Image 1 (cartoon, helix red, strand yellow):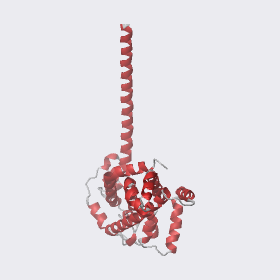
Image 2: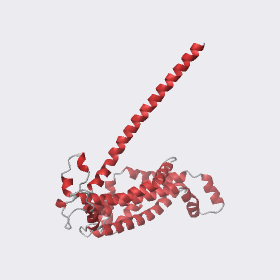
Image 3: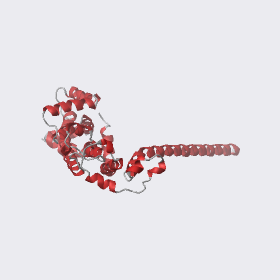
Image 4: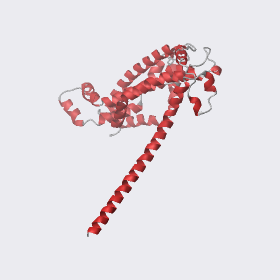
Length: 304
């Protein structure tokens, strides 16, 4: 009997050792894969940062990994990027335009998103489900088609080369309406019915009850819309040929080229410096508010 117990204990210990060894091995392999993936993901940013400190000659002669280290370090690329003015577009103008468009389109877009999501989540009206289905169906249409129709509309309204042409298309997002509508639907119906019994209006219930509860999702939408405007390039370039009405991404694309706009003499390190300049604020913004973005998006996808 004692021999049997001893044999059983030895078997259990051996099994535990194998399980522990297997767990350690699997975790080690997982962390190695994740580390490699992280290095691959962050390498473009590292390359951009190091390239922004190179001379033009060093960048053009870059051949090996060892050439990544700038020698000498050229900090003047950043000042050149800040001070460069190409076709009427400079950093100050682009920054002011971006802030104006981002704040205006985001605030107006938030109001449109809140009211629309509330209507689909709480109000009852004829054809609600059909309208919402058609609204979601537009998400299946390639964005290029909307660019064409928006461009024709803006042209017919004679809004080209204005900031209004940048604000209007950024106001409405079906995806954000869908996210907020799902978040609103998670709020118990009993709260709405109790509020109606107490004589609370839909408008007051929306901003006193639903908006505070859905604040993580609203913060996420606010930040994502700001990031979307900050990164926008094609639409501002398409509708505004004048540099006085373009955004930071357009300024970045033109940095490093001569004042006459010729692309044959582009200085890539200066362009890389401009890329770092507009990337760092977004990186800081994401690091500071990442928990709100993650929480808001995750909470919005629980109930449809």
